[in-house]
Length: 377
Image (cartoon, rainbow, N blue to C red):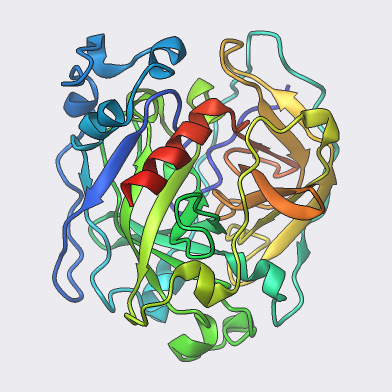
């Protein structure tokens, strides 16, 4: 088994997140062009019992979670707050500063069963400009990991079961929302769908916002991830990576009144508990570490996934051959269901040689996460 790399986020690497209990992050505002330090560490809150359940350390088992009602999720969610981007905070120069670093990942080898042979590399291919309407749902998430330290992930517009045709929900990786066990919560979170669809900022070019952000900039207003990520997540791949997903709720800076789905022309449903042997996966993202520069949407047509597990009590991750690098974290993995694309995972981790990617298997826990944030909106 090859060493497990940092999560595919830039610039500060982190392994995946999310597992069996979800935290909804509500937002507070900051002033124009003001980059605040992250809020105080949330680890103490994550370790506290839920007011609704009194669960020890606030980390229930999957069996307990299945019995939770909406009020239980809501009481847990109220313990966490993040700061979104102020209107106009993200400009092209800040986005260009969201560069990846290349920390060295120590050798880590899963010790349990549930692992398949690693797949052969599949070369990522750049999408042709302008991006087709099908890929208008894909984009980049920008956020700060510290005072003035800009970072970037990839993400996808997903369907909202409570608001058909008018979704404002975005799927990404859990480690693109919060650092995990360090307690750091990221700030100034914003989504840019179809970033650089026209190619206006390719090859070092500069352009106005309507050219590199054709559908505008969408600031996060809520997001969910898990106490398992808060308690377990870190810089490298681990059992926390097996539930490394997050969902953002966003709003447009333009105040047009249209939803994100209406603006980009569509959304992608999430396919939970998708049978692995029926999947032919295409992964999409914006890799930013060399040899990529983060300006181009790339894809890997990877076919059937294999399995990677750090903890056999959790669903094994899906694994595909793909040469995308850091910055592609959170990018959607798609398969065809009923003749249409559906999201079945997201990029989480990969090896130092960037020959494959792994993403969480989206089971009932992920389904509960989407159900909660959809109803909360």
